[in-house]
Image 1: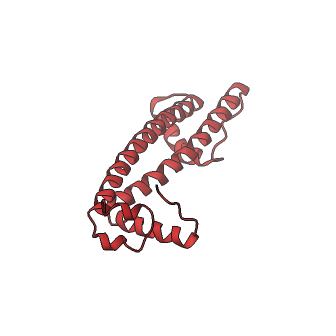
Image 2 (image 1 turned 60 degrees about the vertical axis):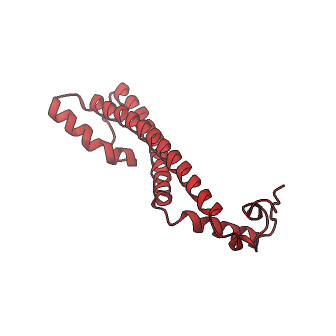
Image 3 (image 1 turned 90 degrees about the vertical axis):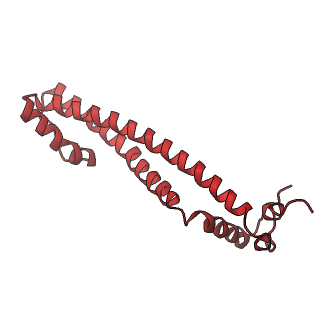
Length: 154
């Protein structure tokens, strides 16, 4: 039976010991980067959807398209302006096309990043488990719980 430590100092000590096994790997840093990028993309998607709603409302009302109000506008409106001027499309339609394309691209990117993060995480956890099991037993003598089971049967 595993024993759960209730002391905060012991929990921090256990966490430091576990992190010592996984931080040397570049994959740990890659997981952190994918989490940060995925979070940014998750935040960007509602901003784009809000801009789509505003663009549709302005187009239906016949008023000019407002620009530069959100991060999505700052990132995507130059592409929409280029498409509008190059291919002679009306600006509101090229803006909507760019927004729809961006939403699809973000969805694909989030899916790929989540897959990559899970794959790397599984590899890293297997590698860290192997390293912990192959470590010297006396390294774990001072810690309670799971560490004592690494030594094997008495």
